[in-house]
Image (cartoon, rainbow, N blue to C red):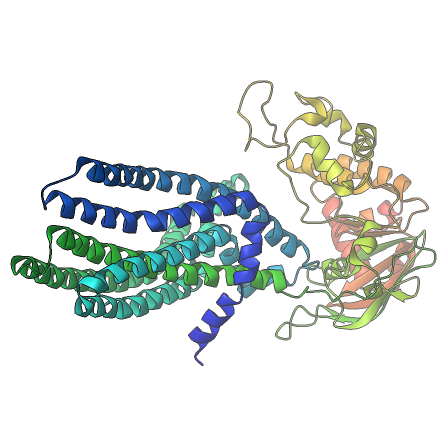
Length: 618
C-alpha cells in the first residue's frame, strides 16, 4: 500500500471523531440539517417527473384541468421548497461550523497545553503540524456537509438513473461510465492539495514571522534605524513567491483536470441530446419523455459533479483534520509519573545530582555533571558568563526539560515523580525573557496565581514590593488600565498605556511576588533593565523578601549577588567555584576575575590600589 493510500486510510479512521465533534455541540442542528438535506434530494427528481407528467397530459388532448391542476400545485410546491431549502441549509451549516469550530479550537489548545515542556514547541515539524491543525477548525462541519452532499448526490443519481434507464439503457451506461475518470481525477486533486498545504506551511510560517517583525513596535525601532525594512520585505516576498510557485502548479493541474472533465460532460450531454431529438422525431419519445431525458442527464451530471467534489472535499478535510488529531495524540515532551505524587512543602532543600543536559543529540552539552544544593531557607546565587548554562539550569528546576543524565531532587525525591502542575505551584520565577501581556495592570500581575484569590490588595502589595505600585496606581484607570494600545484607542478615558522597559520589568517582578509564599523563588536577572538607583532599591526589597525563603538568584551583575548565602560559578556547563563573596574574591579564580572586570567599569584603580576594596559591602 502506498504512502498516499495509507494517509487516506488513516484519514478515514477519523470519521467517528469528526462526527462526535459536530453531534455533541449541536444535536438538534445536525438533525435538522440531515432532514433538510433529505428533502432536498427528493425535490429535483420529483420536479422532473411532475414536469414530464404535465407535458404528457397537455400535449394529448382532451386535457382535464383538474388533473393538470394537482400536478401544477405539486410542481409549484416542489419549486418553492427547492428555492428555500438552500437558504435554510446555509444557516444550519454556518451554525454547525461555529459550534463545532469552538469545540475543535478548545481541544486543540488544550492539547498544546498538555505539552508541559518546551521541546515540542521548539520543533519545526511539530510547529508546522500545529499550523495545519489550526486550519482544521471548520473541518468537522465541512466533512458533515460534504458527506451529506455526497449521500444526497448518490440518491439523486439513483433516482435519475432509474428514470433514465427506462428511456435509454445505453445512455445510462455512457453517463455513468463518464463519472469514473471524474471521480479518480478529483480524488487525485484533493490528495495533491493536501500535500501542497503541507509543503507550503513552513513558507507561510516564515512569511508571518517577517510580517510580524515589520509591524512589531519593539522590532520596528531597530529595523527603521538600520533601514532593514527593505531586506525583510524581500525575504517575506521570497517566501510568498515560493509558496505561490507551489500553488500555481496546483492551479494548473486543477485547470487541466476540471477543463477536461467539463469537456467530457459536454460531449456526453450533446450525444444524449442528439439521441433524444432523433428518438422524438421517430415517435419513440413523447415531449414529456424528452423533457425527462434532458432533466435526467443534466441532473445526473450535476449530481455526479457535486458528489465527486464532495468526496474530494471529505478526503481533503479529513487529511487536514488528521493534523489536528496528530496534535491531540502527540505524546507529552515530558513523561508523567503514574500515579504522580503531590510535591510536599520543601523541608531540606533541592539538589542537582550529576546533572548532564543538552537540547538534542546534535547539540553540545549545556550542563556537564553539575552537582548543586539549594538548602531550604537559604539563598544561592548563580553567576557565569553568557552560555555557561545558567538559564538551562533554571529550566530544569522548573521542569521545562528533564536532565539527559542525572536528577533534580526535591527533599531527596526526583521531581519527575511529582505531578508537574503541583511542582510548579510551589515555584515562582522572574524569567530573564519575561512577558509583557496585552492585559490590564492588575491582570498582568495576577496572572501568576489565577487559581488563587485574586484580591486587589494582594496584587498591590506585590506591586509595592516590586517598586511599581506608585506608577500603576496613577494610571488613568489605575490597576484596571490596559498596558497596551492594541485593543484600545490612543486617547480618551479607556486609552491603553505603554510602559517603559524598566517599568515592565518591575511588573514581571510583581507577578513573581504575588504568589503566596512559594517554596522556591527564582530570580533570573531581575534588575537587568533598571538604573543603578532602582537596582539598589529592588535588591534591598528583594533581600528583605527573601529572608527565610529558599531562593536562587541568577545575575550577570555580581554586585547584586554578593549578599547571597552561597555563590555558585558556572563555566561551560560545569560548576567551577562555590563559596561566599569574600572567599571567592580571595581565591583569585573566575569569580574574582569577573568581579574585578566589572568593578573597573565603575572606578579605575590607582597604581598600587586594591580594586576590590571600595566595593566590599553596600
